[in-house]
Figure 1 (tube, rainbow, N blue to C red):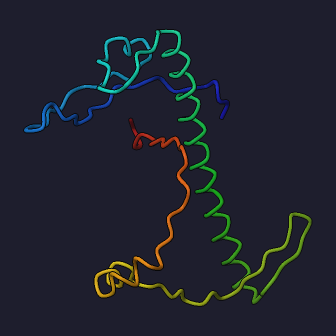
Figure 2 (figure 1 turned 135 degrees about the vertical axis):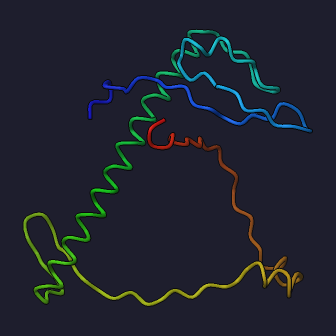
Figure 3 (figure 1 turned 60 degrees about the horizontal axis):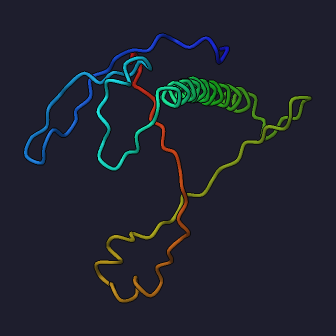
Length: 148
């Protein structure tokens, strides 16, 4: 898929909190030309229309790339299943070819600690052994559901 072959923008229904007491459902514009009509959320800086257009284009490209990545992951999973089935059918543990090496192996079951229960039963130990990682700035992008 060419990244410039973007599907048409669609408008999706989204639940938004209208007040602390109630929630209202409304149509949320997602087309770049409709962004000017959106209210600014508290704490969100105002941005000019050129910036909104630029961001809209970038988010559209991110949406396409995210969709393409999801499709590639599905294709990889299907290919893995097919290779594994063929290798098992022929009794092969490994197979080497120009494309690479495929190896079949059994993985041990994982062992995990029930950290919620551990914190409840031993809060002082949990506090002593809890590490806090560095914070990082991240962009969270949620792909629309199929058909949106």
